[in-house]
Length: 608
Image (cartoon, rainbow, N blue to C red):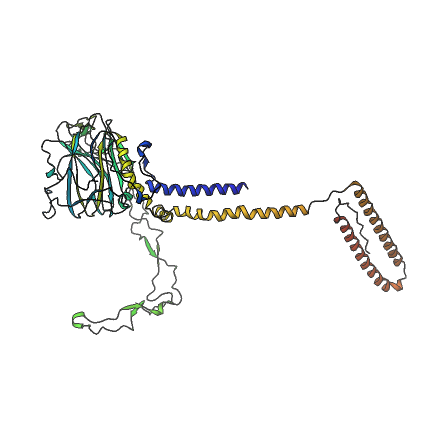
């Protein structure tokens, strides 16, 4: 029974693991670290038990201080300015920012009343931007940038990132293009099989005043799913005054680090650099090993011996066809009618394998096979020894870096006053929605709960059935098929373990009940012993009579010896038969009966 319960526990664990795996697949890859958000910010006015057709959408409204918000629910690009300039260093036919934008609903998993900004053109440059409600200054407050993206038709090559444009007196959004100064660039980008999530900030060199792009290290999670599932995903960047950052997708952290340690190239240069004027001396010896100059080639070392020689012990197989060719002209081939010998040359039939060689060991001239030469040693080389003059690998000497500086707070970046989308894409219908720039995480979370959470709920309601989810999950994790098979086989196995052994146990109990001995009283036991003793006395008397008859027969005359011999043989047979019968009866008398057994000494009849 304990084994049965163990199997039951195992079945429950397997089923739970499959369910958990599917749940993880719906949320994100297992490598993603889930951020603990305030549960109060997840509440919405939506009845979550209702169908996606009954969703009552209400345009999100910010609940705290914000620097920019946009929902596009009014159906027009209010406050957004389309670029009228051209891209530098580009073919004139595609240099202009003439990509088309539209405000419309999602094509799938639509939330009635919810609209977004959609990139509509392919192989075109797109640029649109808007001013912030008020500039964001990097001082003591965090910066949170959050927006939604849906690659409705997937993505072949293109980006969906945003730029936070640097504050300046000459900023003109009608001339927003790729070289417009920005402070931060953040968002997804993909071309070919290279899936990226950008976080780039432009850092100002305090010594020269020049700006240099600093790129965050690539996330350690697989981003492919977010580009191919055609669902709306929430992208969030959090920059903190302690010079740390976090990047989140669907409110789960996919990358985090330090602005001082996890950017490429690093914010602060090295204190020392290699001297560009230093050169390696001509006599510098970098050889760790050298040939032994005192080594001498042995006298018996023969460098002329080949590595392979003919096997002299090999014998030509019997049946080898020396006079047959391995390939012969095809006898059934015919010269094409349009063959021109003047142009094409003399026609020759194509070669085919000789059919006679198929059943023979081989055809053509037989050649002995080659074998390894036991005397081969190759070209002699002196052994290698440690180089007594080894000086190590040379490297230039270090000198103080003339361009060194130390910026201990790279969070204090150039203020931003506008947000823009400057993109190129080979795939249309990229959907953007619900932009927000703020300093409080609770505000961003509530904004997401009123907008992105509804899209997520509708998409979940329109998901395929459980079987399709299982197949989809197994496509990325083939080992799940093992769990599926075990899960299906467990009910059958548990049924056998719990049902079949029960019947067998009942039969064993009935059988054992039939074998239980009946209780015997003391009187019945004495009576049985008396009966056994009487039977033993009768058997002993009978044996004595047989012995007496046998002795009388021995005193007869010799002339009747033949007859007596015959009688003795008959007597012996009779005695033997009687003895065997008596032994059998004794065994039966001992083995039978319900009472305790009494051993009886059996007497064997002497045989002459």
